[in-house]
Image 1 (tube, one colour):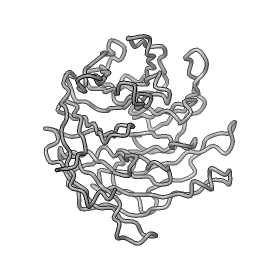
Image 2: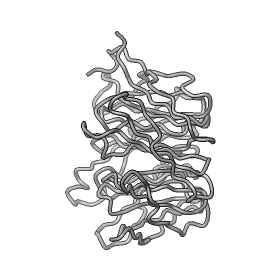
Image 3: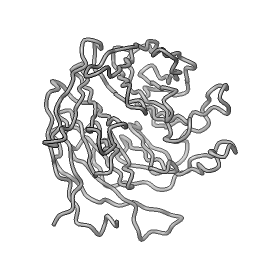
Image 4: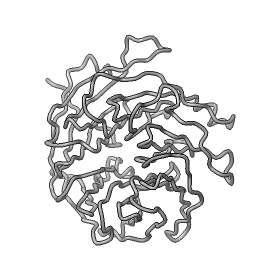
Length: 349
């Protein structure tokens, strides 16, 4: 479908309240995208809690099914489900990462990962669920191996960033780790073999990079394009030859394709790429924007344009935008206003 030819709007389905402080992050459970399984997502907040939301099959509305509390003692900044959807990892300013297991209708904290000197800012699972990455204000990125019995062993501490590391994200198909930082760069970490050490193989920012804090990044469905967002008010699109890497022919660098500028006038905190190719951004101007690739541009010089802008999507900064992994065009957003909103990208009749 040609999105630019369609008459689309971002329609608010539901506003979810319950958190008593800003909501930092949301994560859809990947195992609940199946047709016969209720859709579930987690949210985490400055109120030190994590909330689990589930869609009712009958009413189609989202309800809070569980509140995960009394484990973290400070802000919970990030949450991420394992690929199987059985475990939830939560990263906190209390310098720990908690691992929660869904046992029946309850969630039980089965492991606590300690080691960062101070605030843990983000947590991410690799595609197979065998590795976990965390990052923090101590400028480090930690890689943890998932062991039997819900044990986690730190296998390497990656140092290279010169400032607070805001986010870590694994590539969707390969064990390549990306981290973005207050030092204005994105670093790419790679291990040449299964038993080898991880090292920084590329720094996005040394040329064509961002000029201020990089807050977030995400990949397209194929995994050959990367989008980054920044305090410099731009989105940048990068491309790599992933076929070469998947065939075991060494590391292929990420190259800058284009920059989306002039669309934002406040910091862009979150960016997420849908399976259909729609990039959503959440920013400090309280708006959600959607971008798609222009169909008119030359193939070797792709460009992107604004599909739509939802003004006043929230009353305050938008910290996280996340597309639902299911087939429907559902987007969730989380804000400093303490609420989560669920949106549908709908066609106007």
